[in-house]
Every structure is written in structure tokens, then in C-alpha cells.
Length: 310
Ligand code: ZN
Image (cartoon, rainbow, N blue to C red; front, side, top):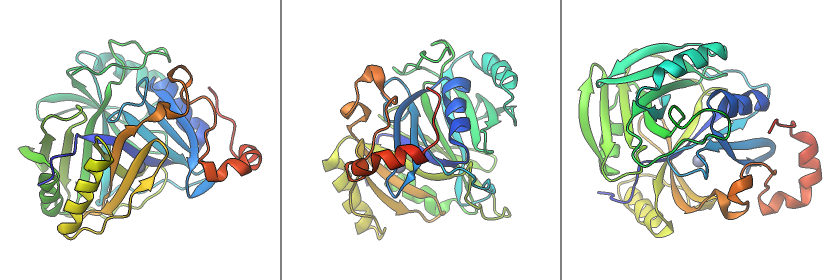
């Protein structure tokens, strides 16, 4: 069994309009944009990262805003809900704030005894805020959302699956422990993690397959401390029969990817080197950062990319 995984590292989704996406995460949710770079395979598309002050692994929501992309279709074989952790007693603030900002799909819920507020992102993204203990995490307050209510990072994610058995077995192999079941949802938790430690598997045997598009999660990344741990995880997965990519340098972390039995694309990402490797913490996310191979094309790329509000 794998013992190196510490919870979530980041979640990467697709969006339509870059400015709508940027405004939603920075202004509506109050998160910090910690990196403004481009899709490494399509440098005419941004890769935007939002998180806490430094983009701590377990807090980082990332987007590819493709422009005029049709919305995805919710269904099985995807991450259905990305869950953000907020402090105890803050859901009343969020209910009013999100409504005042014109956010749709706002609905109270209670799963596993936890109060949660479900809502939709600008492209129909499935989101929830879940009240949790702070567990050493702190919200970014630079965009006007106070530390008593601000987003602490991820709580976890909920997968929508036709059958959850094989994905559950994989999570257990990755170090998660099967916890409770509430209706058609089974919870998996990881001990000693980074607090972004909850994966819920929702079984929807009759639902249609998800169709990817704006508002869909592209992949979900799990955190390991360093490259040595990543190589251990890669070997263990391959020994179990998973087809795992070689290690890829993503500038701010090292990544490997593999497709899981339920259809969700998993990544294992290192906590090193982090988002302040090429920018001071005080100015994270302000300048356009390009991977070195695109630096000679900076002028053209800057002309194509839409200007973003700070
Ligand atoms: Zn990723």
C-alpha cells in the first residue's frame, strides 16, 4: 500500500471566459490568484491558479479558460463536486454573499452530519462550501473576504461514478481509509494529511456519462512531499497494473498522471518547488509567467491572451 499521499494537491478544471473565471475566484470567493501562466500544450490559453497566500498544496484550484467553450454535461465518470473548506459558523455569510453576487444553484445540504452550501460556478461547475475546523490553515484576506469566513483550502471532492467499487479499492491502495456511508455516498479519508483529505464516492448507476466542457473538472491531483515519494508512488501504481505517465516538469511541481477505473483522471504532484520559485510571495500571480520554451514567443502570446483584471 502507498503511504506517501497527503491529500489533495490541486484540482484543474476548464472554463469559458478567463475574466469571468478570474473575477469569480478572486472577488466572489476571495481566493488569491497565485499564478498566471499558460497551458503547457496550448500557450494561447491561460493556466490560472487560485489558492491561499502561497498556493499551499491542498488549496489550489486551477483553470484552463478556453474562451468560447461549450459547457460540460454533468454525469458519471467525473469529479462532480469540488468542496472548499470554510470556518465553522460561516455558511450564513456565504449564503448571503453568493446570492448578492448572482451565484446560481445555492442550496443548503447536510451530509455525514456536516453543514454544507452547494452552489454552481460560472460555467455550471459543481461546488460546495463545507464548514470545518481550521486545522492550521488560513484564508487569504487580500481580496476583502475576512479570515473568519474565508476559504481555507479544499475540504475534498465528490466523484460521480456509475460503480464505485474499483475507485474505492484504488483509494484504499493510495492510503485512504473507507469511512462512513450516507445513502449512495461512501466517504474515504486519509490520516496525517494536509486537511484536504476527504474523497466521497457517489454511486449513480443510472446516470448518463459526463461530457467534458467548460465547468468540468479536467483532473484531480494528489499531493506527495517530494520527487522521491512520487517515484515510489509511480512504481507502486505500475506494479498494480496502472499505466502512469513519465514524470513531467510543471515548473511549480512535478506531475505524473493516470486514468482510474471510474473514468476520473488522477495526477500525483509534488509539494516542491512551489509557486514562489519564480515570484516573490508579495507579488504572486501578478506577472505572466511562461515556461522557458515559450519565452521567445512572449510578445505574440501576450497579444493573444485576454487582459485580466488584477
Ligand atoms: Zn494538474
